[in-house]
Length: 406
Figure 1 (cartoon, helix red, strand yellow):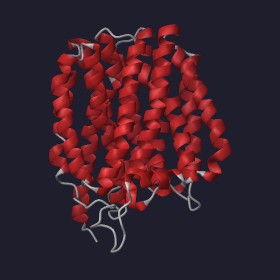
Figure 2: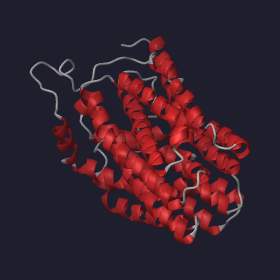
Figure 3: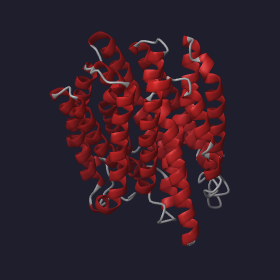
Figure 4: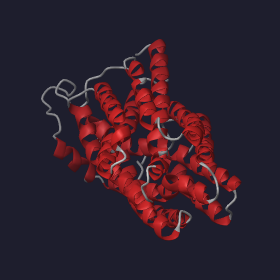
């Protein structure tokens, strides 16, 4: 049994890693579109770059999950990712001005930055099985807080000083994660020869895919969560342009993002008390219904206050969605390839859903203006509710009596 002192240390270190990671993620992901627009690129090019960045991260994630299950301890892989992000951030400021440089830098950064978060989720879920103080929702809340604070600060900064520090600040934030990673537990990969019992051979990479895709509930979860991201991201990716179209600034955009992230943080902390009394199936139903309210409100009114209200409502849904999705992929996966099961599922759904939404949204922005993505979001929300109503009984485990990761 791991001592309470060690558990508290790990909880604090995980919380710090999530906080700093989402500080960097806020800058890289949330401000990428307005940054590229500032560099002179149009909406379609922004959609292309963000979508290809996500596709590259989708190709990298299965390999990263398998490697951390079979070859390299997860902590070591994250340290290597930070080194790569630091290097790419340093060279990014110059290369971003040319289209080919922009594409290479953004996609390569995404290959290390996006899987980082999903691997953290898988790691936290695994540690929770032996350390009860390491509670996913509480730790993930610190990430939301980091996102909120950075959104306010960076939005305020670029409104006054421009985007000159876009890459340099990211590099410093990711480097500050390193000391905290060294405080976290070092463990052998679950699918290595040293971890498996005598006589068992580690699963091969192709066999890992086969095992997961043969499971009906895992396949249905992939469809459900992909549709969720397609409903969520049209507004999320182009919210900065919607704010500008309604007469706001990047500072206002940062404030709207921060309001949502702060709500997400509070819900994640509060979920420790209330979500454990509800099933994943019931919580997912709530997520889909609440998610439809954001585009609904934004279609009803173009006031600034509606932007804040809509973002807060979406963040409430997202705070419930993420623990449910991590737990669902963990339960539907295979213990030998836990990192692969969780991280590949989270990345596949978020990347395919976001990339598809970004491409469609970028084209809609160029043809009909930024407001058109709100209708796109509403359409996907309705489609997902219909799909879920037909297949929800086959998605979650038979003993789905509560949300575990709270």
